[in-house]
Image 1 (cartoon, rainbow, N blue to C red):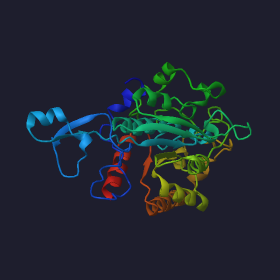
Image 2 (cartoon, rainbow, N blue to C red):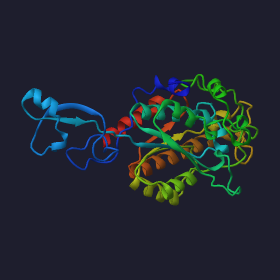
Image 3 (spheres, rainbow, N blue to C red):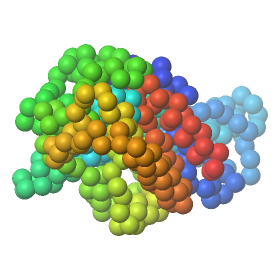
Image 4 (cartoon, rainbow, N blue to C red):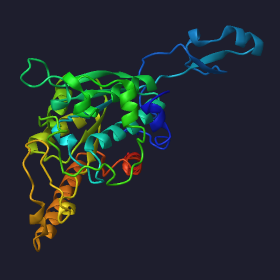
Length: 346
């Protein structure tokens, strides 16, 4: 184990992805075996019981015991866990903690990916929109998928995808060298709020220049994924339309879906600071001075609380576990809370 996987392992010990599907019978465990029939690994030996296959009898052990002894095999229960994110200019904006959203998303992906690999699952990535090397007009599918891998080394390669890297470090859409990423994420968890030093809500200089929505990778997953997977959706607080919720309903029927939101920065915190909030996708300036007007800040906070409550209610109605991540310092507690609630509701 090396790199990001080693750094995240200490913070992912208590994280465990539960199976959301209900048990279909008394013999079901956490989730069904990934292989039909028997594996090549013998777990232990036990006495013969009515109904056991003759080919499972260990004849040498039976000769020593003067009674039939059968082999019990180990079942492989490896799931496909896919991180789903869009990236884009929106991830160059600030999160609620004052850190760049891309760093918070990387931290979240590292924690969840490490927890999955420790449990024997294979982790892959579905990245879309401006986070991939291709754009919608390049003649190439803008949504890319990396094959799931079940090792810490493979997980580190997944976390080096362009969607998790600063655009300035991704010339031509390629991921930076491993050492560059390690230096950038040396203090993966946690980091003090407001320590990023960014002076704006979003930066045109540090943005991708293209807006991206989580809708595209979700549609790609709904149309092209075969078999049951675990989808860990990492998105910002972009507005979701009724069509998006219908797409999510379709995905939830086929896969196990977890939704993680990287919280937006509080615009009311910019009032009176002299800093210049800028929309990262369009470059439009946001007049923070207006938020200092009497009653406007309260109305803004009330509208934000109502919007977040509505999203929580819709996801709860779809049986999709949801966590809101304010920053890297709060990522592990929020994920732990979401996974425990999901396991309890199962």
